[in-house]
Length: 137
Image 1 (cartoon, helix red, strand yellow):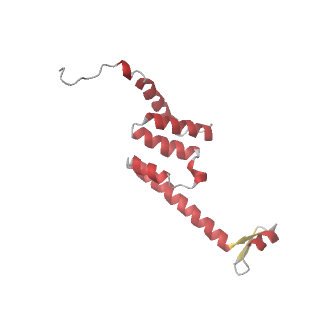
Image 2 (tube, one colour):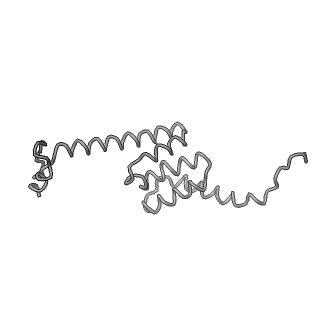
Image 3 (spheres, rainbow, N blue to C red):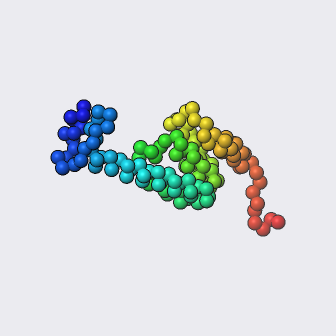
């Protein structure tokens, strides 16, 4: 296996052996760069949410790499929470539902999800309320 890893590296690229596995320095550098970029984006998402800048957080969410886009944590802690703060309970419910599918045993964000479901139940009663009609006061 180590020899096939070494063959995939360019002839001029530095290689190092860790635990019997040969790694290309260039691949390590690219991997570290991608990890730092991901952590920077996730940090920015958290910062924006803590500042209640939810629309900006949702825009930043769209910048995540595809494989991290639909993870349970991101869907519940970022997307669902952002839509909840924007009082868009239908979108929040969709995000939390997807989060539960992605991570069915995670309890993170379930307090907010419960509140979203409660509000959706209340919203279904909204048509029976009387509407304020201008000029009839």
